[in-house]
Amino acid sequence: MTNLTTQNGMLSIESKNIFTILKKWLYTEQDIVFRELISNACDAIEKLSTLNTGDPVVQLEKGKILVKLDRDQKTLTIGDNGIGMSREEVHKYINQIAFSGASEFINKNNNAGKNTIIGHFGVGFYSSFMLADHVALETKSYQEEESAVRWDCMSDMSYQMEYCQKTEVGTEVMLYLEDSSPYLEKPGLVLDIIKKYFIFSKTPIYFDAPGYDQVLVNDPAPIWRLPKELVNEEAMNSFYKEFFQDVSAPMFWLQFGSVDIGVRGILFFRDTKNGTEELDGTIKVYNRGVYVGENIPELIPKFVNLQSGIIECDHLPLVVSRSTLREEDRQEGTMELIYECLSQEVTIAFHDMFENHRDQYEANWPNLNAFVKYGVLQDKIFASVMTRKVIFMDILGNYQTIQEYADTVAAAAHPDTIYYSSDALEQAHYIEIFKRCKLNALLFDHVIDQPFMRKYEVARPNLKFIRIDSNIESLFLGYMNPGDDAKAGILKDKISRALGDRLHSMTIKITNLEQESISTLIINDEKSRRMADMLEIYGFLNPTDVSLREIQAKSTLLINMNNDIIRYLLGASDEIAIRIVMNQLFDLALMSQQALKPEDVESFITRSESLLASAIGHEFHR
View 1 (cartoon, one colour):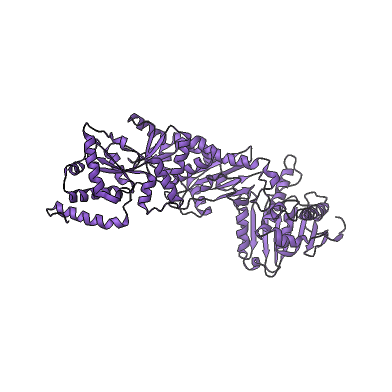
View 2 (view 1 turned 30 degrees about the vertical axis):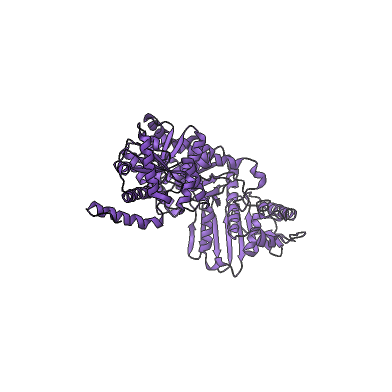
């Protein structure tokens, strides 16, 4: 062994104290210290393993990392049995390259912002001074002829390097904690940080501290990395519920991977209780098993973020903040490839489910509804395949795609027209009319259905979407017999007098419908009604202002002369009776659209009681 010699020196900085910068400017979270030092330990173990590929250069033990907290000595030690360093390497990589390179970069880019600085020239090692005023390093190279080295550095930038008695290959970094360090009183904080960043690290990590006897922190072989054929459903469900803190098991999951771009992972499609629970999910991103962030927009399509999952990348070009890309790395295309990979994997899985497992697709639809439609609206890859595979419940209780419905309607002599209901409760009267007429309509009752419909109309301009209370008189085969025009004129005058100002700008249309049970309907021009809906959404139209909505929606009161009540009105001469009956029919028509004004409710109740009294033999209350 070479005679022990000591090298003393000062790490010089021309214009800035680098430790002050690291402690107060570059790093905003002390978690970074653990992430950087343990990441370095993982790298050291991986480098030694790589060197040993082929002809062994050293007798290898299984790689492991030990994080030890000594409360009496007030030290935190991160040790590994990796490749180690010689004295020359310590001087080169710790004293010279890392430090001088970092200081040069900081001086050059002082105004560039912290995310452009971190991640260059090994600055991460010096994050140790966030927790300690004194940092020591003991290391022994894998090369047998090299002696072990100890390096000590104080926060005043003075350092000392000498040989030491370390016998095992590897490196230990010792942080001499300040008395006020919270980790001395609460060692569990360290354990939680290690779990956060290294729960899936491939290298076993142990934690030794008061109350913790070298406990294994991470899971080097998590279940989501297993081949699909080896996955146990019960175990996967348990993993999901524990890891994502969800009381419900996922509906299903999708494992994916691409060797070409070095990405793998799993997506869990969550049970959102038919969309009543929070839709946003959590997708955690790891770089070779080390946590780097979650829901990173450059990596993950927006619609995929509605689910929860894990993505692991081998070549993720991130800076130390781990959620920000270095600008020079954006142009390499890695992020775009990962983004497209996720879109493609989800698209393929949903296409297969629709084509080959339609029962499962429909059973899961209440939870997948918003996810699939949002994906179509947001992602071109997904939309190119899944637009025509979106399904809707119809008013008869069956699921259909728009094209499947259109094919059925075409057979019923109403081609290229999609009738829909936007609210099954508000439009219940019209739904029942459709059913009586043996007609069908789709339920577009989710908030995302309207933008989806507009996108579909652009893609298929030959199709017309008509709400069941709009432009529907042609469905009921309205017709006029010879002589009906004169009757219609008389009837229109009576209705106008009976309703008076209540009609506002609403027009009256009189016809004969085959369905005798229909007396009156309020119908709206589809395009105008959509405009009224949009004005209401953006606050330009008060939803309680029924008369203004009628004007905007171009509402029409449809009168069926083939109905017994209307025929009574046509032949009646009692103006009071006509007024009572017509106002009652008008209120019922308004109620079918949830459009009865509050000030008209009392009149409706009083009139209804009068009609009931008449039905049991009493005269009208005049």
